Image: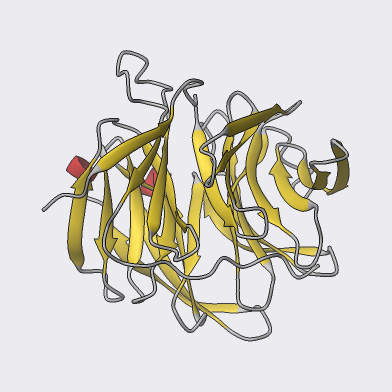
Length: 287
């Protein structure tokens, strides 16, 4: 049976909703509208939605362990963002040689490192890469080249990094060592044309991957071997990412985009689904 789908926030339809992240200390789900550009948040207790415009494309936001501020990924690179002080402090640009690129999607591994993809903003060049931001605020290019580097997530034990090139319709698996090095890159899943393109991902408490389908109007659950276990249709064509939230991590929130689907009323909404499984506790950046 398909789960009940609730539209949580659509007063301001996201042009390119992305990067949902649950921050339990604030009891808020944060996400971004890359194209607005804006940061948005949902207070799970009250249902209130907030927004903060940004001066440039904002790809993701990640909390910092033991602190009140965040790390964000911008077109100009990594930065620290203090929401209460409304202050944005640059860290650095990992791709100064590609001024038309922007940071696109990111997740934190078990060691507190951020893994962030990049992409050519106009999607006309294969200049994207996968970068690692360490707790000392230094970074390193780890893999490339990608058309659209997207959707990182990890296996339950943290020893496999899943990462996709949306443009190539391929999700890759890479072995992740304790020191942050990668090896053994292989294709984990190739999307058939009818599925659209792989976008954001998350891992549930059973070690299965949930993948958003851009152009596919659905999310899918796959086991650790890449076998399709479940597909859930959604009332918007461009589904971008997903994250478990709430005190019991049993509420799955899904972002979408109205870009290219302006005629669809639900496109660009934030959806909530009860899918019967729990997510993993969110990780904060260690620096």
